[in-house]
Amino acid sequence: MQVSASINTQLRALIVTFWVGSMWTVGYLVAPTLFATLPERALAGSIAANLFRIEAWVSIVSGLLLLGLLVWDRHFEHRRFCLIAVLLMLACVLLGYFGLQPFMAELREAAALNGGVMDDAGRSRFGMLHGVASLFYLLQSVMAVALVLKIR
Image (cartoon, rainbow, N blue to C red; front, side):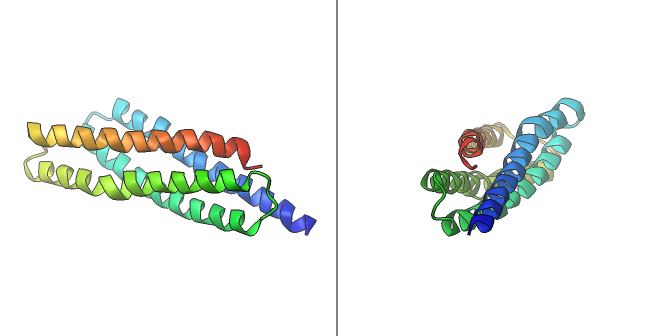
């Protein structure tokens, strides 16, 4: 039993490290760097959108794996806290990426059909959706700090 608990602890730490590290890297290093260095905002946005799509799936797989490990290890001291944190982080992904991103993609596609130009209403709507999605990402990032501190 001691060996499996140790392996569970190591797997939890590894999954959280991968998940949170990739999330912070994409959201706070790579995406801003794309917009700061690429001359076309549309290209930077397209690349960032693809990276956030991959990150959303990384989050879902990582979150589900962590949930499985946490449900299995009933003796983990911070189990309840970590279960709630993972569920809230997954909710942020589902709402932020799968809930809002389709509407943002629709606005980008409409702009592409219009020669890459988004009208004022589209820009305003895109900005609002982007702001809400960014808020979900920030909330997920803050919960990730708590998860990193409690997972071991």
